[in-house]
Length: 138
Image: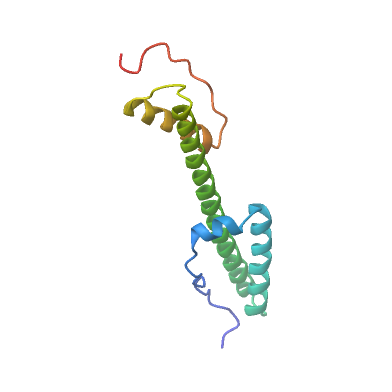
């Protein structure tokens, strides 16, 4: 056996039920922190440092790759939760507008409203109001 460790492939993570995960992760930052600690402990116990600096570099590289994968999964879960909430909010808004007879929307205007609301609710950056001076059909 040589003094260097060959990089191991990333372990297979079980296929997550993302809908279930969405409801189990309440604090994404705490989840990432906790998972990254677990990853580092796992790497430290399964890839002990040898006399070679290459082995420790491989272990650090593996830990970084595993952490990056966990962070990506957390972002996907958070995005799914945001979209689910936005869709629910849009549905409620449209239903209430219809029930209270506030506005009568034809399918094209309804689609435009849905699109605008989803952009506002799902956007990472602040939105700016736009004043429409023309009609939807002009």
